[in-house]
Length: 343
Image (cartoon, rainbow, N blue to C red):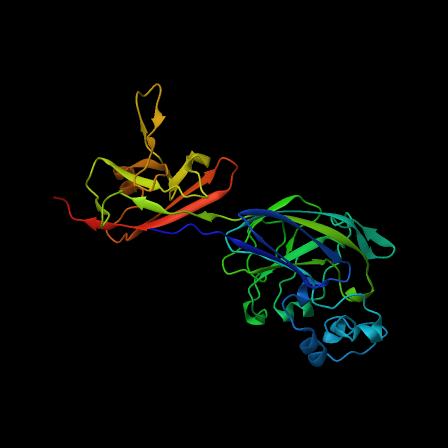
């Protein structure tokens, strides 16, 4: 069985040194992203950048040269930068779904625009920025861009492929288009931070304006489940033509009536039905299976359907149940099983 997990979400606004902590499965936060923010400096250390790319003031940065970094990594007091070079970010938990939208005006005059960018005007970021471990992306000038990272500095050897079109499933270190939104993206495995920046060619430090980015985070709730209540171990005969009961256990802060049983599934296999073919009903019941005084939701799955779809095999040692609440918040739970030979 698994214990209910209350997800901790922390918003860290790097530019303002503000930290907001919220205990919730769904929350909405807002971060202000300046036009000077470049996602290719995401996850870097300001001091190391300045040491590795000493500030100079070339009349025109050389294409294909790390001279393009110089103005961006320079001491702000020398080059009148408006913010540290490392872009703002929020902290995320992998597996969460994010809905992102943005408003505001930013860019390099006279080409100011909203976060959707300047329609039809592409300004490809110079290739040397990819040496910092963040992939390039095809997008209009001034488009709001995002990139997911772990807690570590990006590894240049792990730079993923460039995205040529929008995606809802970006990889770690893979810059992706957000624009004005709203867009929905899934946080990749291992990600702990989402950085934001403006799409530009080079020299972000002389850009103007900012956009406000609103992010609604919906994180899966881990719930306690019990496969074959009152049975230990949870033995399953793969030749059985019966049903497998799985209970989602209620808790003082979790009402099982908030679950939508129609969304419940094990690797895509839903709850079986009972009754007539003309009026089938989901095979579920509400009862207290563990004697704690709280109602639990018991759902029944067809064993042979699980076997035929390779959800149950001789090597299976655990099953994951997934579902959603009536409000669309994902939930999941895992319990162990033991496959036994036929009698």
